[in-house]
Image 1 (cartoon, rainbow, N blue to C red):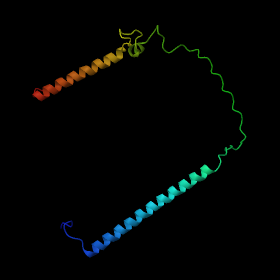
Image 2: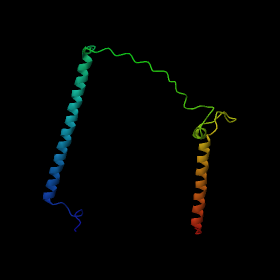
Image 3: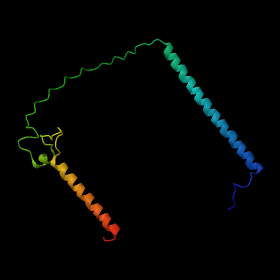
Image 4: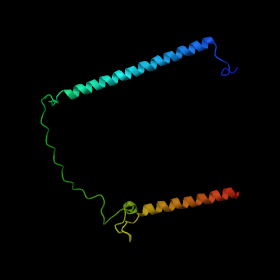
Length: 138
């Protein structure tokens, strides 16, 4: 295929290019004029709104039924979900202990300690695996 970028434009191509450029310029000019008209209309509306005295808008009075008073909620006689004296295994694992460290920060729950330990073991095992595979042993 011939390289068309190095060949000069023919007279027909040059005329077509000029026509397309003129069409593009006309579109851009029309767009700019449209934006200016829209801005002018917005400024005129804003000016009219500022000149007119502010009149309070009164809502149309529609017949409305009075709202019923909310019913009082019945007292909850159920025992609390968490009984501090009888914690289940799951509650003991995920709840923060009541005592604090020397610096006043509450201790970690046991489940969080277990998760951190397991992640640490996986990181060590991954590092060993990578080291052994790079050494060609595994």
